[in-house]
Image (cartoon, rainbow, N blue to C red; front, side, top):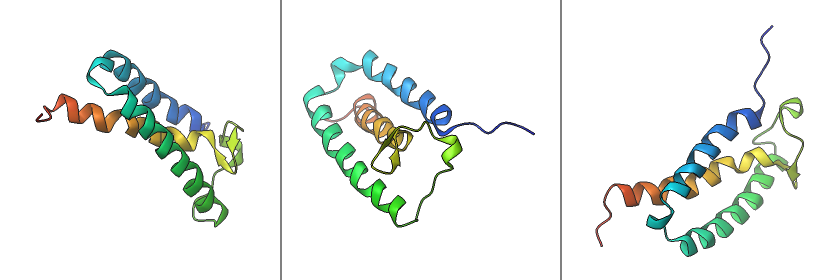
Length: 99
């Protein structure tokens, strides 16, 4: 039987990839705005992900999570937020935002 990938093994590669991109293009990103956006979106993710897990809309296989949780949300659940925080403004900059 094939072993299932953990949620962390699935989440880590895109987070690392876009983290490296953020470092490479950090001069083109507004780090102050990115920091504020990070705080707001991570807090919103914390609240809403906990709610959707508590209400049973989304569930996680306990054997596949890292065990680190914020409330009832596994830390892996925040990976899409981290990727979006880099992907959206970086795409905007690289596609030639009109100033």
